[in-house]
Image (tube, rainbow, N blue to C red; front, side, top):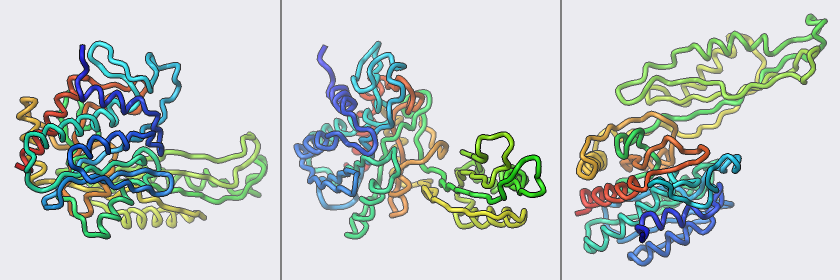
Amino acid sequence: MVESEVLSLAKNLIARHSVTPEDAGCQRLMAKYLQDLGFEIESMVFEDTTNMWARRNQSGPLLCFAGHTDVVPPGNVSQWHTPPFEPTVIDGVLYGRGAADMKGSLAAMLVATKRFVEKHPQHQGSLAFLITSDEEGPFINGTVRVVETLEARNEKITWCVVGEPSSTDKLGDVIKNGRRGSLTGDLTVHGIQGHVAYPHLAQNPVHDAAPALAELASRQWDNGNQFFPPTSFQIANIQAGTGAPNVVPGELQVQFNFRYSTESSADGLQQQVCQILDQHQLRYDLSWVLNGQPFLTDSGQLLEATKTAVHAVMGYQTEPLTTGGTSDGRFIAPTGAEVIELGPCNATIHKINECVRVADLEKLAEVYQRLMEELLC
């Protein structure tokens, strides 16, 4: 049987070994496809990261598809039942690293755009693609740098569709209309190393810090709201000691993370943590990494158009949620753009034998096309 264009493109992208921050030629493939549709292509390379900004027309409003060509490492390749970078279809399911996150979405976006432009060559407004190879990595030289460039020249995105795998049980049952903020703390609690038989000559930072960590873990930071669950605090890594059973450690290192709602702020959380540590009279160093502010699109044309498109193609209602991790939408929303995430099911993302139903990719292209028609026709 002849492969569909969506499946062919998805397989072509998956076959490229684009582990963060490598792009492995994915963006060149996409650029050629978009050039043939009248897009102007701008490659933005920052340090080790390749980004692409592609735009068709210059008038507003501007609808942007955002996504990434990089993937996480495959892990133990011997545990895959098909090679991770050799896309394979078995019983209507496409296997390969990036199939769901998110090369399948990229293929659906491209084909949907082609069909839309061919059907509506004189459409209103503009279309754009913002693509990076640094979403799965440190997110330093990817979307955030492109957005800075666009902002510097006052090039504004009106609506942005991020192709992250948002669906839970079936395509389009969930769209993400916001994400929680993410704040990471790296804490070092200082003690005095010594012999366990002479505790009076040492100071154990594990013992000192334990009550403070317990208080941090049990604290109710906020109650959330109608869009966000309450802010959560989780210890991700903890390390102390020399490995010997008779040595009191001199330092305790703790890494923790907040996923926080719009009811809290990064500054406020930092202040509360320091107050608790100070109340327990700890000697410590603490550094912070703000991974992203919370964002929310609680209303507007994009959200309504997405609901309409999903219902028209799939025959059921979608549910806007803000659960899960975060995405590059956190860099785009602060510019004033309405942002949603819509993509395939996320059950296998980052896992061994990552996969997506081929039929879902075909339907996803239809949903994207209908979404464009709702906004630009």
